[in-house]
Length: 161
Image (spheres, rainbow, N blue to C red):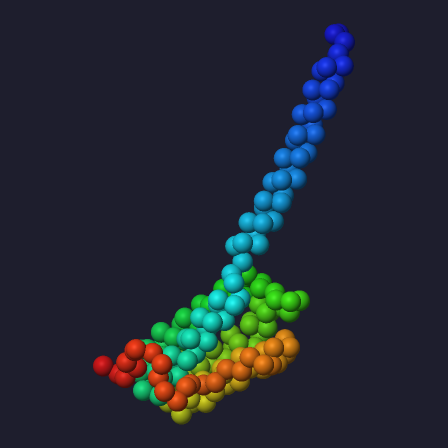
């Protein structure tokens, strides 16, 4: 059996230290990758606000296809927030979206399928209230969503073709 020299011990020590350092870096990179892969709540909420706004014009025009499109987009954005388990300043926004918003979107979708526009308008109002109730429950009551603006700011025709 050969004797291990001091140089070999030093080399083994250096290799083990480098391996430990590399594992720490890999862990930090995995954590950063996870952080970067989470959706931006701000961007998603802006997108959803835009969809709710356009949905209101679609409902005003009783445009089933367009209303269905915006409801579908709202549902997808909500599911993305839920899947990601989004939290914001200690608030479980993903869970709140699951319990407060998604059921209302599904009720709105059912109302649209029924063809009862009075019920669709009622469910749309519930949707907007749900958004505002969530803002209140998270301490952001200053963010108030309205059903629609008085003047259509979009260069989009919402009437049925």
